Image (tube, rainbow over all chains, first blue to last red; front, side):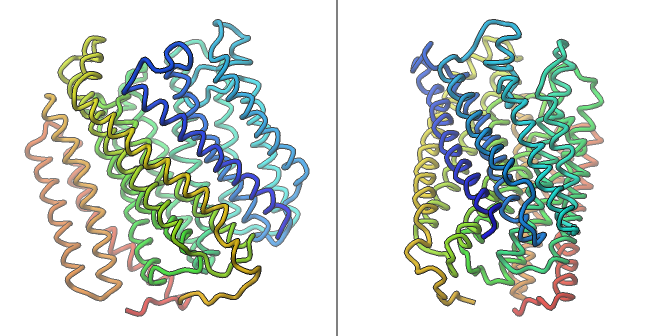
Length: 464
Length: 101
């Protein structure tokens, strides 16, 4: 095993740990809707929500970094360059995440001023981390870029997947600089802030996970490089073609020019089309391999990725992306529902699949299967679909009572929040959240134990 | 757009894409198994999708441009599974990976 892959396993451990923190914070945030008094003035909803969404970004990012550190040396036949600094960056990132989380939990907020911006909270959703931590993350991403590009240069070799990855890292790094706010006009600030959030989630991350899944498919199914790279180019072109200008579907109620709404609606309406192609591709692969692979959990998580992405981003997204709908649904639990489903389908499932692949090799297991992964797979996916469904009901109630009938007044907001439809959705979301958490516990148990009982290098016959 | 029209339109748009997905899945399974029943199920899904597109165009208060987009989308959905499938077969055939139904 390459040293880079040992670092990858550390990243995966950190990612799965943070995945758990995200779930705990999410459950707490969900419970506030049922009992708003709980921990009032001690640990408010806003702090639980910040932890929930910021940790979401970090655990996925760590999963992506781990996946690249895992596949890169095998892809280029060369140990990753600059591993010493990469290890330092890993520990710095972990320490920064812990410190920022402790500050969020115990300090929470400060006075309006530079000190708070630098050391407590920058106050912008998803990138609340204080400025010192943002600079730290920027440095870690730079180290990551150096590792990838340096390895390609040292190996004197570049593959299609690595070329796409390197090109993608440039906007991935550049866009994160927007997390350091310098604009006092709120409309202009939000305009650029959406560039960061949207272009990461619906552009650069899509390309990154596309590269990671391409590498994973070659290892998991033995798919040829030519096929994988051809599809990577097609899918990246289609996803970027529809995704970049889909940015406009966020530009509601922040003072941006009206034409953005039409541009955003038009391009994001095309987003389900490439996802449909991916679903057809997934069915083809499943059929070719007759739903069997030497790593069954990884195979099923890859399939879940294709279907989850289509339903979460495609179906849920299209429901609310046209401006006449988005006008009402924007910023309600409806969006939250879409966010949960799309993040899970597009990224969460993919990271879990890669972790199973890495464990198979690191534990020298020829065939990965068992019962526990099936339980975690089922509970996590049923829990997620249940949460997304429940949030959809609550969000539709909000759009209906608060926006369409009540005209978005404060009183209408309060009335919508207390409507039975909204509340029942919140109860159901919490229930499915518990189910999801149980699935996570089994996932952790499975990741810790799978393949450990098999003798190292045992050649267990895998079904063909 | 009234409150009820909002929910109805959104639900129709979601179901429209869902049936597009159903078409893609059933079409692909039908091609894999060489089974006309699955293929027929896929085309039935597409039929429902077209029906939903028609309902969106006729009954919802979306602007004309968006209705045109829905019609275009419905047509695009028809082409995507067969075109994707053909290309998949081509690329896999060249590599000697052919599905044997």
